[in-house]
Structure formats: C-alpha cells, structure tokens
Length: 317
Length: 182
Image 1 (tube, each protein chain N blue to C red):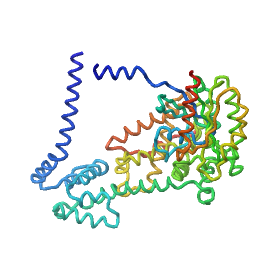
Image 2 (tube, helix red, strand yellow):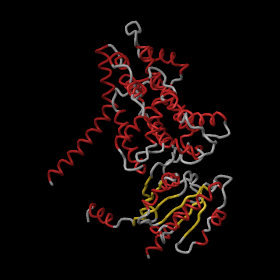
Image 3 (cartoon, chains in turn purple, brown):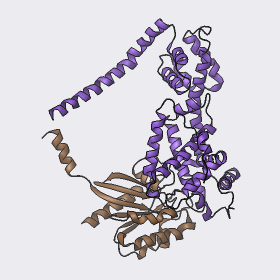
Image 4 (tube, each protein chain N blue to C red):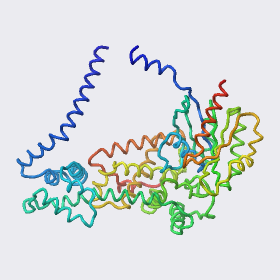
C-alpha cells in the first residue's frame, strides 16, 4: 500500500516536472537552443527542416510547428497566406531570416511546397464545409441528376421505377426518398457516394454486395454518409494533415478528400466483414473501433490512406 | 471526516437511474433530440445505423436515453430494447403529413406490446420550427391519443433544433417517473 502511495506521488511529481519542463522549453530554452544551433551550423531552423527532413508529413509538420511558434509575426502569418501572396511571403521570410539563396538553393522551393500544403489544408476544409452546408434540394436539377446517377452506377441492370420508391432501400437509403438522409452532411455525403461509385465502380459494387448480405449486411448509403461524417470530423480536427502532406505535393483539392472517403468506405467494409458483428445494431461500436484504427494509422508520419492498386485488382463477387 | 469519506458518502446516494426509450420513424429527429438533451453539437447529425445511448442528469435522476434508429429495416430490433423501460418517448415529424398514418400504426403497435404495458408515453410533436408543421392538437386527434386508458400519456410540441418545448417534455417525464415509483 505504502509502495503504491509512493509510486502515485512519484507519478504526480513526474507529471509536474514534465509540464514545468514543457513550459520552460517552449518559452525559453527552445529559443536559445535554436540560436545556438544557428550559430554553429549557420542555418536557421526552417532551413534545417527543409534540408534534413523527408518531404511530406515529416517536413511539413515540423515547418508548420516552427512557423506557428515563431517569434516573428511575419512567419506566424505565413501559415494563413493566400495563394496570390505566396511568393511575396517567401521573399519576406528569406529576408527576415537572412537566408542566402545561393548557399541554400532548394530552400525556397521546399518551403513553398510546405506552405502550399499547410494553407491548402485550411482551404480544403473550407471547401468541404461549404459542400456539407449545401443541402440536398429536389428543386435543383444538378442535385437530382446526381442522385439518379448514383443509382445507375450501383444498379446498372435495374431501372428505377420512379423518383420516390422503396427501391432506394436496395442501395441502403432509409425510406422512399433519399433526400432526408443527407441531413448534416448535405451534398458532401452525396458527392462522396457518387465519387466512389464512379471512380472505383468495381469496389463500390463489391461493397454494396457485402452490405446487402442477409445476415452481415448494413445500409450501404447510410453507412456511407456516416463515413463521410468520420472523414469530415478527422479533417476538421486536423488529423488528416499527415495524410494529405504525404500524398499531395501541393494544394489538396476536394477530389483528394473524396479519395480519402473511398479509402474509408472500402476498408470499413473489409473491417466489418472480418469482424462479423452480430447484427446491424452493433454498428456504432464497430464504427468507433474502425475510427480508432484509422486514428492510430494517422499517427504514423509515413501514413498514406490511398486505395491501392492491389485492392483494385481483388476479384469481385 | 476526510475528503475521501465525504466523496464516498456522496457516491453512496447515486441518482436514481431511469431508462428512457426514444422511438419513432426515421427522420423524426430522435438523434437531434438526444444531442439537444446532452447539450451537444447538432449541426452534423447523420442517420442512425443501430442505436445511440447517452446519460443525462436531470432533477435528481440519471436519465439513460436509448435512441434507436427508425428506418423500417431495423424496426424489428426495437423490441430488443423494451425490457425495463421506465418511459417511452415517441418522436413525430409534425411536418411530414404523408407519413402520419405510418407513424400512427407504429405507435399503436408499441402500445400493444406486453413488455411496454403501463409504461408512460410522451409524444413529441417535433419540428414545430417548420411552417408546415401540424399543431400538436391535430396530431393527438389523428393518433387517437385520447383513447389511451392504460397508462399516463402526454403530447408536447417541440423543436429539437431550437430546443423549444424539450425541457417541458422532460419535466413531464421526471414527474411521471416519480408518480410511478410512489
């Protein structure tokens, strides 16, 4: 008992020491350490990151941290710079940090990629948010056309009898009219579903066939919209940064977000089939399990959640 | 008395637990209601596959609220959650007049369930923020609520989106639990 008490207070001490050290490091030591290394190597922190770290998440994540914690307001503002002012911003950084371009010729282009990725992520989130806020509207032809396209891509051999029909249940919508199912995910949900069916048609149909399994099945479209929510939340919290930094060497676009959704849709199905849940009522439990699995993958600096050729080649049932 | 024993004493008188079942057709607003009760963000709700559960503290009760998906395909699973239910909350989309008949049938079937016999029922006439919403009185009449004799019942108009009317409904829930336990 006494030992437990001691180890408890030891733990507390460690935590206290840890946080004091953290404060000390961030506010004081980091600055002097950087200054010291700069004097020895002749290069500033950003130069060292751009030269020594592997391109992608390892480099861009460190550059982002360095910029955000800089003492210089110019550097701190760089993470929010607009594309039109990017070159100007790079000039200012180079001047501010007294970097000689002849001595470090790759610095500018390397940092430019980092900045495109950092600001691109923020912009991509704004685009997904805008699409999410766009409600499905039956009065708009392009929305209706997209919905019908989803049906044709998934069910090429079956004709939809009417716009409002029980048939929608065959691809996993809840009722006779899918429009209410988009709810909080709006057009982002529908666009993801259509993108997966259009660009990975075989995979999408394979997933649909699993979803329609009498015992192990689930509602394809509803689960798809749920996975859009997962992708959206990961995006919002910044968890997808390493993935996009590794897979897009510039500004990520909506298309890259849709591709990430495809990865989730394909791999959630695989996970579900492997886990063999007792019934669809277990969905939220397995969703959380899958969510945790993805979050762990995203902690790896080399993460890349891309549907690979290998999975494309798998035979379809 | 040390801090620890005070804490222990507090712990030994826990809130009375109440099991609440939240049912209704899909797109009625059950999950929005659940999140509203738990004071959570309601801006990106997706259709419920399976169920959600949350515990909320209210008036000395610990309300364990079970929100079960409403799509036709999973309605057969509803009965798995009937046991030990203290209060049934039935949520209706007051603006979806086309499905009043369907929702009435589902409610009638629930009220016939043996495992739910005598369980107080609160009907939320939800989505009153919409202009096309039917008033609670009209819904009560359509559902023949006045013919219910075997249990306490109440209809409450509300908007899960704005939160209006939700607390009034929950007050009735707590009151009816108190009445039942006495």
